Image (cartoon, rainbow, N blue to C red):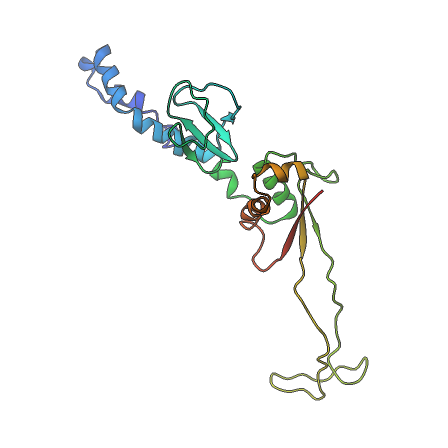
Amino acid sequence: MSIYDVDFNKIVVQASPPDKRYRLFVAWLKALVVPIQWLRDLWMGSYRTGSTAIAWVNGTSYNKYDRVQYKQKVYESLIDGNTDEPIVQTSWMVVQENFIGVFERVLYTGNKLIFEYAINKYFGSVFRQPPNVSDIYTTVTAKPYSVFTVGGIENISSVVYSNNSSQFIINQYVFSPFANLTIHVPVALFNSLDPDPLNCEKIIRNYADQYIIAGILYNVITY
């Protein structure tokens, strides 16, 4: 048995002297390890491999300890007959900031195919294997600048050293930052992320910034 498969309910029985394994005594021991088993199930279970909690449904009554997924987080009900929205802190407790398991998340990169799979899974949209287009997809922006010539005579480059050059270097170009890629998001999904439209793009960027290489500028647009 590995640490990921440990069951404290079995351990307390196996660790007890055979002549002490009365039903009431075993039940008492199991009650003592409930918090430890809860932590094991959380960190070695759903945090590691991903939560199986279903999406929260408005108007549904949840019992204590029921778990739901709400806006990428996993919440656990603190009361019976819970009909509150998961953001109500007296009724719900956040047990996972991300419903996707950490063993899967460490494999995500900024590679186009992997990134599109990851961002669609995170926001609950549909990923489609190329050449089909996913709900959230990316496109690369062509560079708007051409290569320039160093030197004073057309088509002839000067010799450039670390601190001088054989001819003057043309300095008539004006460069400005430009987006290297664009993330395309369905407008319905984009608007559902937050009541404040100004926060919707921030939510997309907070996720994308984890995987897009630093220094690469990008746009977020809807369609």
